Amino acid sequence: MKHIQRFYLGLIVTFTLLWLWVDSAWLGSSNYFVWRSAFTNWTGILGIAVMSVGMILAVRPIRVEPRLGGLDKMYRLHKWLGITGLVLSVLHWALAKSPKFLIGWGWIERPGPRVRGPLPDGIAGLLMSQRKLAETLGEYAFYVMCALLLLALIKHFPYKRFFKTHRWMAVVYLVLVVHAVVLMKFSFWSQGVGLLSAVLMVLGSAAAVVSLLRRVGIERRAVGVIEALEHHPESGVLRVDVRLQDRWDGHAAGQFAFVTFDPAEGPHPFTISSAWHDDGHLFFLIKDGGDYTRTLPDKLKVGESCTVEGPYGHFVFDSAAPRQIWVAGGIGITPFIARMQALAKQGNEQPVDLFWSIRELEDQALRRVQAAASQAKVRLHMIRDGQNEPLTAQRIASLVPSCGQGDVWFCGPAGFGAALREGFGRLGLGAERFHQELFQMR
Image (cartoon, rainbow, N blue to C red; front, side, top):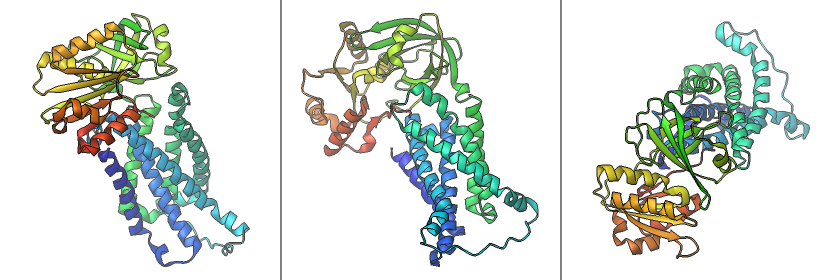
């Protein structure tokens, strides 16, 4: 999380300082219109900057992923940037509209008529001649953007509809780029704030075009065929075996992929539950935790095609610590199954304890996990919800006295993870040694 926090704050601070460098006349002024002009510039410049970065991250740039700690962290940053862009856009709109209301309420006096001289020659004159059009386009784009971002923040809004409506953000973004280019003070373009804004808008526009052409992640897609299906109604888990028909460069245990079973539904992220053995086979364990995944046991058929895009994520068990503690909550066992398969093949020198907290489990699934743990030389601790004492950091420390020397890898419900992170923190385990996938893509 620290990677994206530093990036987020760095972006805000950098653009604010660059804006102050070129637009500081308001600091000694008591004139409302001088302040309004300055902060309209600030909200506009910073707003298009955060939206540009958000647009770039939306196309899943693979070179950026490791620097931000994985795609899950990138999507968390994307969400923060979206919310920030929304707030800045509302402030920008309010500043633009404020004279009308403040004059009507009698709080400020109407300024005298503006004397407009002839338009300058060249690009500056061309941009100034289009200001009215840019203002109109920006206002309507603002209204559409507010609606789309609010829909994206509503958790109960169906993913299928979110996937389709959110793509229109690319169109809105391109309109806002036109708005920003025309209305930014022409003198800014030769300064650092204008140059950096231009770079981000060019990259963001290219990303928007990639999104609109539906080419996000196209170089990382592989067509596959469903080879086998195995449904476990008691635990609500569906195992889907896929045989890839395209090239797949492999994956590390713990990574995930976007899988498209139905083009109309769009891609959904699922952890890859199998280690890579260079044989073109993958399998996924999918929990019926949502409206879409609940329908998969009835919809999917052996022999049907699907698309697998990835791999993504950095939940890959890289650690130089003397030992590792793994904690899985329910279906969160999936990355650990893949890791145990890999360890069974390559060997394991680090002592590993796996704590699995589960409510319902079929005997067959339990035997498979026990067999995988045995082959990987992983010590398995089963915690039955409702039957055993709840799993806490203190309980883990009592069962593994040397856990303070190791790293903790957690996959499961967010609340469970937050409680464990806090508990291990009280025991002196630094936040950098608690690894967790933020498996929330919106």
